[in-house]
Length: 130
Image 1 (cartoon, rainbow, N blue to C red):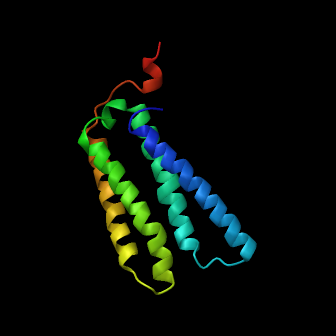
Image 2: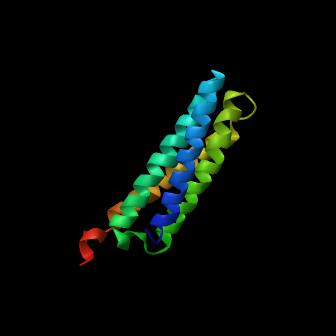
């Protein structure tokens, strides 16, 4: 996996590992107070980033240009704000990080939507190798 797909997949794997460790910790401690943040880490970090990686891998032309890099930056920003921001909101310390992270996640998905709409039908990467 190369190009923009690679950092998305690396982020996905790191988020999956973090989500697993966090889930085990919550289970062992019987304290599930922060489970919404754990869920966001798994869904936005692991699942969404893996889907982005597979899309960019299968449609290599879509990963070219500035827009996919902006998509990656918005995704990283959203995770960096949301994952600590949700626990801070739950603990009633501040909601600002969670709100900013939510907006960054929305921007990330909007950018991905534009990338998908702009991408042209092409042979999948696995079909090009002969």
